[in-house]
Length: 204
Image (cartoon, rainbow, N blue to C red; front, side):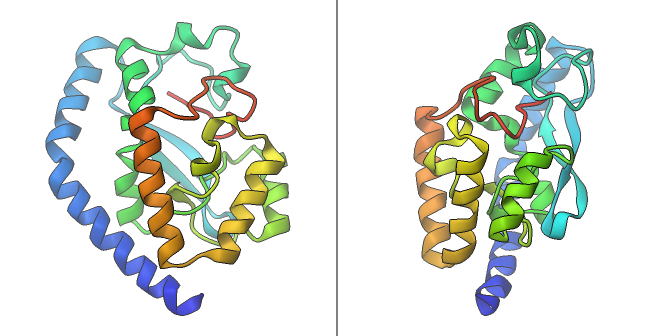
């Protein structure tokens, strides 16, 4: 696994750099749409746990109003749809709100493939992942749990799948996750706003 981790880090940086160069027009268009339709910043920053549970701030395009309660998963809000902006609904449905995490990858805080980074206060998920060593690697933009259920997964199932990824991590595993994710995003599979497994808080 160690030799592949070195290759993986190089691939992450190279692909993220290419992605940034190719996608910057979309970044600009989305930023203009967000600023012209709702008050607040373009990007949303939230404290997450990275490799070895080191804290970092994940970046996303803001999809919710600025008066949304902070550090609260969407499914705990009384009326989640009330806080989601019109542009935000589209960004979340298409997963375009995740694009700024390319910056997190370039900063070596995240990988393209890996367990989705947990919120700092998701103690139950963090504890479950500890059982499988899933907190010991870089979190990812997408991962094995995402291609096997995404927002529909319960905590123990998500942690088990993250652990399975750790055991099987390799080039072909990552390639499989990447292409299945692309298909799932196009079909909007597994996106359940406020669903039972909405662990990563589809936040602002």
